[in-house]
Length: 284
Image 1: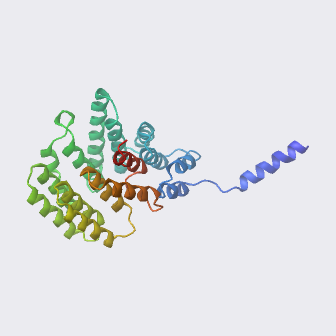
Image 2: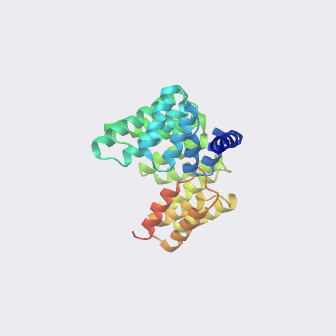
Image 3: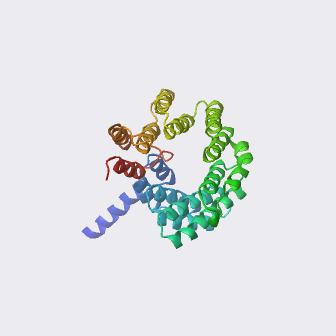
């Protein structure tokens, strides 16, 4: 009898306990608590929406294979979801970066195909268009990359986001060693989106890459005045210092503040990336 009563009491308590929801998982994701978000998602019925969020969590937590597995299931359930294909392309891309040569080639092609599919499904999906530009810009021709392909995307990028088109044009100009034109394009991006701190960070990084450190520091300070609470400024400044091999102690302090920040979002560089950069600054 005692066992029966205990069992009934457990059942009542379990039924009264609040049920996990997708919204809870999304809230945890937005707080960059990816492991907790995944734990909630595992208790929910499998759907395209839950699989997409799980894939994003795994990707941003550095679990690239699990990310692709979740997102591949997701696109099977919802094959016309442009953002799902975008995230799948990102997951393939991360795996390509960390795989052996033969696997990397296969995964690179899958990355391109996923981004191209995402753009075909929704040309207004600016994230997919920007990712496809990045792929074409960075990847060699043997896996479908190419600067001409990247340049051909500029009109579509401009339709979605004129400031991003100016930034993309700057990337192409800098690669062609047209540094004056690149700077003009970056300044145009700032003018077109004066409230987007990322545009100032792009300009500050450009100055640092070309040894114009005083201008770089002034631009980083301008970014801090515009958005004093955004941790991405700490990361960008630390990264610029490390790449220039300057003031590494300051870079380390900036990264430690970044890692301790409670304000990180999924749009910021991951803690994993920050820890990797910190090790580089520590010489390990």
